[in-house]
Image (cartoon, rainbow, N blue to C red; front, side, top):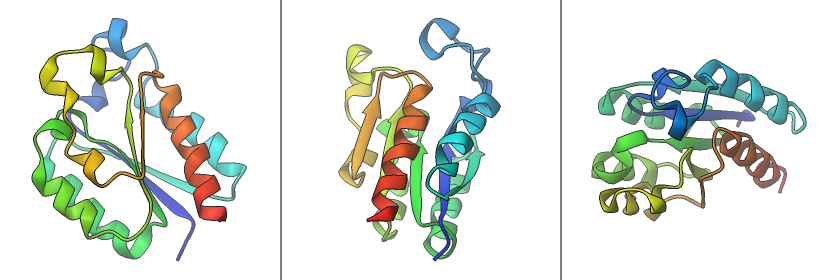
Length: 146
């Protein structure tokens, strides 16, 4: 198995840096990718960061990860709270899964307090801004070295 980690991002995360910067900050998804690559290099891990506004595409990438990725870091966006299909796909994946949220979802609307993805995730990082991605890569690197 390669030491590639898929970082999968759900709907509206393509608008990072533009959409609600008071919640999500000014960094773009490309900035996030660069921070993650820097962190991953310390572990000899390659990052494959992807974003889609389409649930089926995210599911296809999780299926692809079964053969191509040693771990998955996922920020499913709003699919966090709605997608049993993404949970089912993650349950069919054998490697480590880490869930990331830029905002602290527990301080937001009550519907955001439930995560289907958390039922599969080996860890959840929320409320650390985009730094949460680097924290997740750091943890994933540690898990993959074990």
